[in-house]
Structure formats: C-alpha cells, structure tokens
Amino acid sequence: MEVCHLKRHICALFTLMILISMVSPSAMAKEKIEKPGEKQTSELAHEAKSAILMERDTGKVLYNKNSDEKLAPASMTKIMTMLLIMEAMDQGKLKMTDKVRTSDHAASMGGSQIFLEPGEEMTVKDMLKGIAIASGNDASVAMAEHIAGSEEQFVEQMNKKAKELGLTSTVFQNPTGLPEKDHYSTAHDMAKMAKELLKYEEITKFTGVYEDYLRQNTDKKFWLVNTNRLIKFYPGVDGVKTGFTGEAKYCLTASAKKGNMRVIAVVFGASTPKDRNAQVVKMLDYAFSQYTTHPLYKRGQDVAEIKVSKGKKKKIQLVTSEPISLLTKKGENVDQIKKEIKLTQDVTAPFSKGTKLGTIILKKDGKVLHESPVEAKEDMEKAGVWTFFKRAMAEFVKWK
Image (cartoon, rainbow, N blue to C red; front, side, top):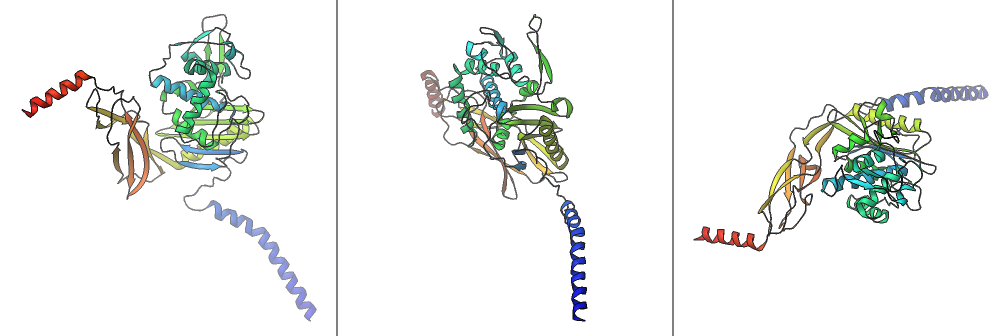
C-alpha cells in the first residue's frame, strides 16, 4: 500500500511540474505585456552594443542600453565637426558663401570622400553638403583647417566643446572618425552632441537631404547620396549621421520630428545596416507612440532684460539658447507649470553674443522639471570715456 501511495505522489508531482512548465512562461509573459500604461522596451536595440533614445528639447532619456560604454564612433564624429561649423556661422566668423581651399593634407584623406583636389575651392555650403550627405573626410579636414588653422587645433576645439557640454566620456583625435587610438565616445554623449547641433535648425537642410550634387554645371559633377537611408524611408527623419569602420561596426545617430516632438536615437555596433536601421525605427516608433512634446519657447525668443555695468548700453536683452518644451506621456497635460528666470548678478561689459547670463527654470508642485540657459542677444562692448562722461553729465543734470 505504501508503495502505491508513493507512486501516486510521484505521478502527481510529475504532472504538476509538467503543468507549471507549460503554463507559467505564457502566464508570466502575459503579465509582463499587460502592465497598464507600460510598453516593454527591453528589446528595442537588442542587436546593438549600446543605444539611447532621447527627446531633443528636454534631453529626457526614454530608453538606453549600455549608453555610457566607450566605443569607437566612426563617422558620427562629424556631428561635432558640423556643430563647430554651425557655431562659427552663428557667431559671425563664417558664412555659407565663404570659399574654402583644400590643402594637400585634406585632399589625401581616405575613406568616404568627395574627391577634393589640392588647391580646389568650394563654398562652406558645398563643403557642408559633402560632410552631412556623403560623410566626406576630405571636406571635414578642409573645414577644420579653415576654421582653426590646422586639423590639430580644430581637434583641440572639438575636445574643448565636448567638455563645455559635459561629455565626460568623449575624446576626439580627428574631425573625421577614421580609426585612431583613444578616439571614443558613448551613445549618451552622441545624443547630447546631436541635441546641441539641432539647436541650429538650418543643419537639417543638409543632414535631411537624401541626394544632391556638387560641382554643378561642370564636367566634374558629383552625385551625393546620403548613407542614412531612413531619410527616404521613415517619415520625419532628417539626420543626423551614420558611421562605419571595421572596429565600430554599423552606427547611426538619427533624428526625427513629428508634430512638435523631435527625438534622437543612437545605435552603436550593429552587425549590418539593416539591423542598425531596424533598431532605430523601433526606438522612433516607441517614442512617437508613447510621448508628446509641449513647446513653451522657441530658440532665440526674448525672455528678459538685464542691467550691465560699464557697458556701451545700460541694459541688454536676453534670449533662449534653445527650444524649450515639456515632455509628457500621451494624455497628460502641462497645467500648473511655473516659469522662473534666475539672472546672473553683477554683469560687467565686455561680453559676446551667446554669453550665458541666466537660467529659465520650469517647476511643477515645487519640483524642477527643466532648466535651460538664457544668453545675451548681442555683443556688449565696454563703454568708452565719452560714454561715461555723457552718463555722468546726465546724472548731474538730473540731480540738479
């Protein structure tokens, strides 16, 4: 009898184990998928070494995978190169119509190129086309030399800008992304770089172009085709930069805009271009299906005025340094948002356009949601002796 009871217990236990193995996985999976308001993101970039998804205006990270791992960025390096070009134009140091001469060194660059010849001249506009669309290494070095005097000095500017942006895991050795020791970045840093670049809205007129030509109306007409195929096949994609080397594999920092919302998706180290693009598409689809951006300020919008000591003018207008928005899950609202502007104390001339002189702070229920710099709208020169004299006389007359 005891043997029979033992056999029945063993059979019952065995049956229970079979049922558990059949039922539990599906039940667990169902429970994971059906959590209210939650979309599973663990598989958005499963084929990449690292990845990140960021909303541009707020910098809010919506998804990441190993996003702080230092990796070779390949031609995504050119995001910083383009950023310094756009910054130079914004500061009045460079114009789209300026002619840029190609040195022997720039013309010798291998890899992706627009086949510049030594001594050849192109406008900044055409060089930027060559960098943004065709990933031209020769155009990148030609622009670096034009802006900084040499490639080495331009790389110093790249690394200085990286520090200014708080990119603690990025070091550049060249403006192209060609393989070089100790040249690295991370998905998170790349997203921040793209965020800064996209402040200059005109850049998407280059990064968002699928095909164009250089040397129009010559016998050396050159066809440019963007290596970022998502520009053609995913509505709203308008940048920013692909990358590939044997070490880095297939990389992409992509940007897309739908309605008021712009997002940045970065993938490092995908096995094939198809895998890279598929994972970026998953991230973009996730962002646009789950979130909404609420614009509050445009870049360059007047927000405050501040007194200036020893300046040619007594006050200067402050403007936003970037678009400012709030990000919410779809269906949420942005009621009861408080806006504060904290101004720098004791501002003394001289200083240049773009100098940070305060911060816009957005709060809800006492909690800080977002902070963004406000900056000088124009250059402020130091007042001369004659200006000080006139002011003194005006004060004297007023006193009398």
